[in-house]
Image (cartoon, rainbow, N blue to C red; front, side, top):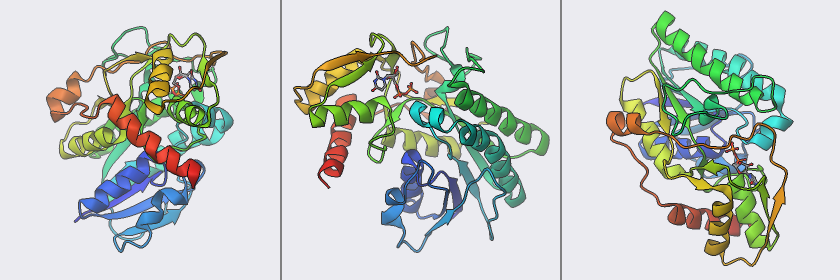
Length: 312
Ligand code: UDP
């Protein structure tokens, strides 16, 4: 049994990680300041004797007593709407928070696992994106606060690995969806599903020709555990290579929910990436990993989750 600390453990991905480590028999320390995460996401684990919760902003020094064998740094606003509203906390958690988390991992001789993002590729000029692509990021644009913070976090993680010999991993997470996403976090999956269920028009930004590829949360969690089992320190993309335009995605949501909602077009947010599609060759070779959950299946589970929340 290992003791695992998860920053951002009360967030969407973080809470699924907490659950997966508990299910594997480990002890979990969830660290979260609940800025975008919620107590509700971890409510089911609070009574678990191997689970504990620390309400703390990791941009400030992190005090943890006792051993830590693995530290997974997942704290950050992650929806464009959130990080546009919270630009400075986003920059701080990616920079100061990563530094503090790395310092804690070093002090505890823990494995350090960084949640990075496809946003490090910015509005990419190559498709699909391999890990060797250095990206096309506007540092002073509105999304720069997230993109640059995560790029800094990767650089800092590699520096701790090279200079201090810290045992590190970096995952670049592409659009992931599933239960426990915040209904109002502004991302396309919760927006379209809740709009469809309420009979409101689906808000397609721009012409809807921009592409994304959607990974179901269970596939991501499986990939993260596989990566932890390796000793590979360079970044690894985890995402679904199946690309879809935002407009086609809206139609898919309408079809799946049987909704009669219409589609309205809204302005495209500044620096919204036009394409995004992971090259997952590295994950395939290194981890023997690829997505297993089809979009229809994952969306059905997500629709079920949101419909319960809307009713509840
Ligand atoms: N989008 C949209 N309507 C919405 C929310 C998002 O058309 O109500 C688009 C957005 O412009 C982007 C894509 O959907 O092109 C994915 O947006 P999201 O906020 O989920 O995250 P991103 O992939 O941009 O980080």
